Every structure is written in structure tokens, then in C-alpha cells.
Image 1 (cartoon, rainbow over the protein chains, first blue to last red):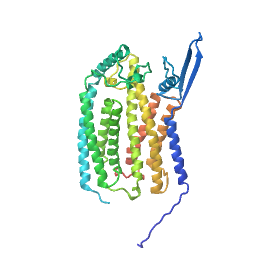
Image 2 (cartoon, one colour; image 1 turned 90 degrees about the vertical axis):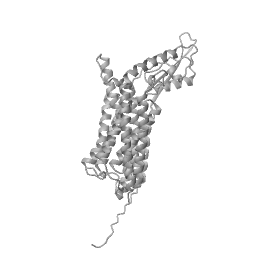
Image 3 (cartoon, each protein chain N blue to C red; image 1 turned 90 degrees about the horizontal axis):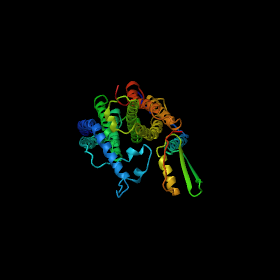
Image 4 (cartoon, helix red, strand yellow; image 1 turned 120 degrees about the vertical axis):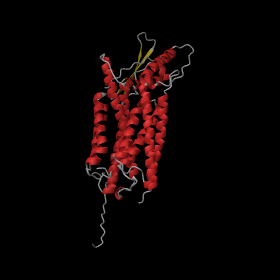
Length: 93
Length: 341
């Protein structure tokens, strides 16, 4: 057999874009998995006698969110609410 | 190109030794589990007493975090549970953990020696992949003990690890050898490492899902007033907690699995000149990815919790297992480097 060499040369100009795309896709995926989506509502009203200020804080999660309570507590702390009454009705919405 | 046979031999001996120690650890974990129900009753009582003590405001300094004194939802009760004084020590469990640490050291030494003997990352074939992967599972389990007392799960972690090692040394065993030239690349370290971290996480999530289903079944039976067996399950967290733990571990494993897929495509482009060739391994990795994506979607956007989602997760793990074992045994493809079948 005569000696020979086989060469295969390829050039793919799109590989950089493919890499960029896949990195962005993975970044987006991680964000969607690890950033909780929450809505937090705060309502401030005078009570009936008009002597006290009543602050209601509510939070709504998209899907499940086991740290929703902490979020509410953080808001309460930030507002400086004393003697909060906490209740939770855990329901996925 | 050469292989250091002496080191490879020592590596195998270390692996057998670690299996013996694992067997001891497995027995101890089982004994601990067997004594679990009785202890749970004692523990519950002690916890109740501790709570009563905390609730009394006079003088008593509260040592736990402030969160434990707030009225709270159902999830906090177990997470806040620290060690409670006055409980019997779990001797069998302590022995089991010590044995597991020893076994893991032997196991890791075996993996490292194998790597040195062939002068590459020691996960180039199925034997190496399963031994190295099993060590990751044990490592993750031991690390998770620092975060929470999961020693009750020991039986369900060390048992499968032992089974995997047994399978590795009997069915999957491959003598130390070099890789096919096209696969020699640093991508071996990247792609395969992430692949088995993801697999280890999915395995843990799978265990949690199975335990969740059992716990859920027991809770429903009890609510109906029926009798339930498997009293050791008392020792485990509630079904809700197991469900959430399973979800979190899945959510952690999924991006890693995605990365495995992407890194695999990059390596494929590098080694074989195309990103995607519908190779059986590629296809089944994608299938598992799609199923797990379905699981996460069902939970995140449809609000599926509990049983319905759990079944999808089980199917996903089935695909992972088939991808790992079935594909290599039944199909011929670019990934059939295993020397099996």
C-alpha cells in the first residue's frame, strides 16, 4: 500500500455565536430557577378610632416559594412594625 | 500510553476495602433506623418540653434563634430543631457516620490512584464513572450532614452506593487503560465531572421523591384512620418538607445537566466535528433533560405540587438511569467506550 495522509479541514465561523447563545441560555435558565417571583402588597390605614396606624403586608408567590414568610418579615422589619400578627395561608397561585 | 499496573492493583484493593467498610456503615445505619421509632417518641416529648420552656417568659434565656419564638407556618418546626439536651445519644448512627468517613477516604484514595495509574481524570469508562460518581454521592451526603441531621437517610444513601460499587466491580469492571485518541481532551474533566455531579444530585432528589411518596401515602392513610406500617418513616421529615427538598435538589441539578449537554456538544464539535449527531447517549441525555424540564415547569408555572410532579421526577430519573446503563449496554454509539456488551 502506498503511504498516504488524509487531512480534513473545517472552519465554522458561527461557533462563537453558538457559544454565546448557549451561555446566555444557561444564564437565563438559572435566573428563572433561582430568582423567586413575588408580589408584596403593603396597605397603611388608620384604624376606626383614627388613633392608630394599621399596616397590612401581604405577599403572593408565583408557584412555590418557601421563603415568602421571610420576605414579609423583612418588610415588617423595614417598616418598624411592632407586635406583628403573622398568619400564613400557603397556597400556590 | 502506558498504564501503571501496580498502582491500578492498589486502587482495586482500596476499592474492595472501602466496600467492606461501607458494608459496616450500612449495617450500623440500619440498626440506627431500627431503633428510630422509639427514639422519635422520646425526641418529640423532649422537643415539646423545650417549647414549653421557651414559651415561659420569666427569666429563661432563649438560646435558639429569634425565629423559633415567632408563631410560624408548618415548615419551620423541623428546621429550627437543633440538638435538644437530655436525648439518648445515637451510638449506632455515630458509628455509621465514622465508618462512612473512613470508607469514603479509602474510596477517594482508590479513585485518585486509578487516575494516577492511567495519568488522566479517572472517569473515562463506566467502571470509573460509577466508582467516582458513588464517591461524589457519599461526599454530598456527608456534607449535607453538616447542614442538617439527615443520618436517618444513611441507609438509603449508603445502600445504593454499595450496590453501585458492587455492580462496578462485577459487571462494569474495565481494566485500567487509555482512552480513544479522539476523546483525549480537557473536556473529559469538565463534561464528565459536571455530568456526575448532576447525576448525584438527581439521585439524591430521586431518593427524596420516593421517600416523599411513601410519607405522603402514610399521612393519607393515617388521616383516613387506617394503620400504617414502616414506622421508621416517623423519623423522617413530613411529606411537605420532603417534597420541597426534592424540588430544590432537582432545581440545582437541572442547570448542571443542561451544562453537561452543552459541554458535551462543544466536546463533540471538537472531537467529531459536529455538535449533535443523534448518538444514543446524546438523545437520552436530551430525553431526561426534557422530562426534568417538564417537572420544573409543572411545578413553577402550573403549580403542580406533590404526587403529580413526583411521578414526572421518577420518570426523569428512569431516563437518567437508562441513559447511564441501558444506552451503553443495548446500543452502539460514539459513547460505547464502556467495554460492556
